[in-house]
Each structure stands twice: as C-alpha cells, then as structure tokens.
Image (cartoon, rainbow, N blue to C red; front, side, top):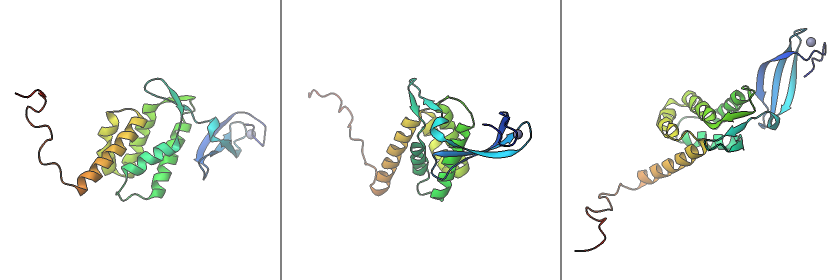
Length: 175
Ligand SMILES: [Zn+2]
C-alpha cells in the first residue's frame, strides 16, 4: 500500500472496518513517513486466515456459521439481530487484525465466547460450559442446536416419569 502523498510503503493500520456486505474490509492507514492518512479497501478472502481444526484440517472462516451460533445462543434473549451482526463483525475484525495466515479454531471459539459475554451474560454463561467441553466450533454449534431442540421439547412436554430402562432390563434373557 503506497501512500498517495509521498509514495512511501511504510504505514500502519489505525482502524479496520468491515463493509456492509461483510466481503470487504476498509482500513484507515497512516503513513509513517508523512503521517498522511488514507483509506484502503481490501477483499476479505485475501485476508481471512484459514481455520485450523482440532484434527488438523483447514477450512475457510465462515461468518454465517458464527452468526448462526450466536443467534441460537441469544434466542429468546433481549438481543437484537443488529447487535448480533455487529458482534460477528467485531469477531471477524479481531481475527483479521491478527494478521495471520492460519488461526486455530479454539481462538475463534474463545472470541465467540467473549463476544457473547458482552452481548448477553446470561446466554454466555448458559453456553460457556457447552462450548468449553468441545473446543471446536462445529461441534459447539451442533451441540447448541441439539441442546435448544431438547429444551424446546422439554418445555412443551413433561419429562418422562420413569426411566425407560427398568431395573434389570439389560439382561435380555428371561428366567
Ligand atoms: Zn506519506
């Protein structure tokens, strides 16, 4: 990035913002030589690091997956969709600002948990233990969905009165 004033290549990023569609990042930069400030627009795919999963596989950062997870976690909580979207932006920005080519998935998970805490401490506490036991965003979101399904089912229908497996029910052979 050349300074439009003095053509110096030395500059520092003073602010990063996601474009409205989330596919562009707008950076405010300051030239180290002449202190002129200028703005650059960069395609996000070129900058978002790959996510390194627990098993070593790499996959692209998926904004929608995080958005889905947060939306689920904040369901029925007093949190607007707008705030959730802004939070996802902030997470994305924090990952971009690391400036790394690869980021382990737990870093993303922790960022999600931290953001969730700001968004809604109740939802955060509710799901922190779930997340921490998985340390993987895919499993986390999957488990979150299952948990919510179970809760929903549990709220409309009473819990089974007796366990289905009666005492001694495991010994299949009769007397
Ligand atoms: Zn300059």
